[in-house]
Length: 313
Image (cartoon, rainbow, N blue to C red):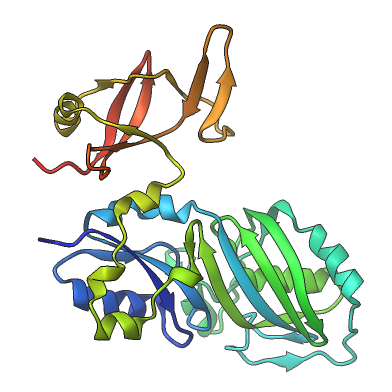
């Protein structure tokens, strides 16, 4: 039987996310294996790895908020924005006060524009940006919107500055440190980074590669349902399971309205005149044993259809 599920791996510093995935892939053959969010080789911490049918849920894990603890050295710069590149110390760099740093950090909370680093896996004219940058070509990537939920200065002893960050997907932490330093009239390079959480996947519950290599790796396999923890849940009857397996719409037992606006909050409650109807984008449909059977999308009028089906015939 091909395994399916999720491993909360604690990626060590010094290896790529691809190398971490390959460790699991060798153990889980012939299951398909993928990760939900790259960590740079310098970084360590939570790397959510999906196996088998759970690889179809990677996008749901990628939507989860992420938490980091990043260490930066002020008064320094490098082309990679971290200590992996050639670090140059700025002459006569000023040492900002802790109060100045915290005041500047507050301005980065919320939805902001961020210019990704030149040394990144993003593509420019069909080529990886880091390939172009390594060849000495000038790489300027367009700014893009990101969301910073929390940015706390938890330690400061110039030049060392330690930040704790909670953010949405697509955020480059080294670039966040770069921009914060620029707002203070200086520069910064990232010297260490730990991803402490991805949604409910926390570093305290993660497993190191050495542990899964030398033990029973399957005991660390978590159910696919954890990838869709934020979705509204329903339990399907036997009849609904059959209809879902065949790709047919099913009738819901409770009023669920499809969200039409792009700025809705999943699972938010809308107050009506005669009833409370829940506004959802997608529904996690479970079988009687509590296993993920399908992802449904509401159609309105009390109906929903399968968007992704995990039911085996």
